[in-house]
Amino acid sequence: MSEKRSGLSRRAFLRRTAALAAVPCVVPSSVFGRNGAVPPSERIIVGGIGIRGRGMHDLRWMLPEKDVQFVAICDAQKRSREMVKKYVDERYGNSDCAMYPEINEFLATRTDIDAVLVTTGDRWHTLAACLAMRAGKDVYSEKPSAMTMAEGQAVEDTARRYRRIYQTGTQRLSEGNFTFANELLRLGYLGDVHTVRAHIAPWDAAEMRHDWLEAEPLPGIDEVDWDAWVGPCPWRPYNSAYTRGGWRNHYDFHTSCIGEWGAHTFAQCQVAIGAGETSAIEYGYVANDSGDGMVTKFANGIKMVLERDMDKKIWHGSCGVRYEGTKGWVATADGYAQPDMSNPAWMADFKKLVANYMARTQRPMSHMRNWLDCVKSRRQTVANAVMMHHTMSTVHAANICMWLKRDVKFDPSTETFIGDAEANRFRTRAMREPWIY
Image (cartoon, rainbow, N blue to C red):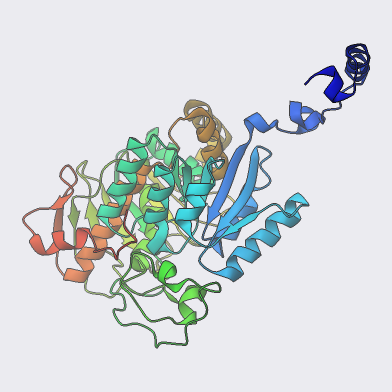
């Protein structure tokens, strides 16, 4: 621009520029990470998919982490979107949390998001995780993270191909009592371990419902996008009970009483015995409706017994595990002040064993923090996609054993049932287009 057009002489321009240069530029200290703040370059930008119930617990767990900035919620239900937005905005003291009703638009437009929290119903866990990872996002997914063996394989393959950090919500792998029990086993305190026991949910059944709820008038798509809510599952008429958790114990949407808690406890047991990247090879049918008492066997000879009956006094509380060896046993579950064990003197080593585990693995006693740390470091999480897939395959095989009402044998190397075409058909389910991974 010429001096004449600007109305400003060169000399005056230089004087004004010098004066502006003398004015200090005030930058908030938070930009530099002072006063405990995390600078923007170090923050993990997070969005959510399908957050209600358990998902709100995860969100409350996540938001206090200083390096997290939660910016958007995607949900097929308006009330859920608005609930999450209200909570997040109140937490941050602004109105910035964006809402999206449709997952493809959400993932395509929010290129600023580094990672997503997936806490939909079971039917959407795999599809949402795979779509997010393909869009370049790291994923924390609630359990059970796969409805079938094929879904578990899809999550594992997608995480590997796109080099994404993945954590499934088996949070007891990052809790002191369970870590201590695992370390007692690993370090030989129990002697030669021959049996581990895994808690399955004491409600519902292994054989799930194949009917559907009576149709109700369908709300407007802005209130509930029912087609998206059903997602990859077979089409079912709208009923508001589904959206309030009534999908449980329906074959289309759930993984049975075995999957409900087995997603946790099978993972705990398998990691403890060094079988986190394989599956049980033998499954013995039990003539009841739940799988209680089923004996599964791993290639290393260790048996895992499914336990439902609280009257056996194996543990108290939910999601319990018990490990038994030639030198003793240990058991723990939710709500324990400390594990039960055959030799109470072992408890003197509690702090040492947990601290040594944390130092050796570089993992904290916080499942969410483990994921966030790995998002930054690109190390594998404690409950990564490989571990999730193979432990969930044990869940699925146990279900299939109950559905067929006979023993089955499984080959983890090929991920097929041995000489059993009928069982192999259950390894996957058809997905309803366009909701496919």
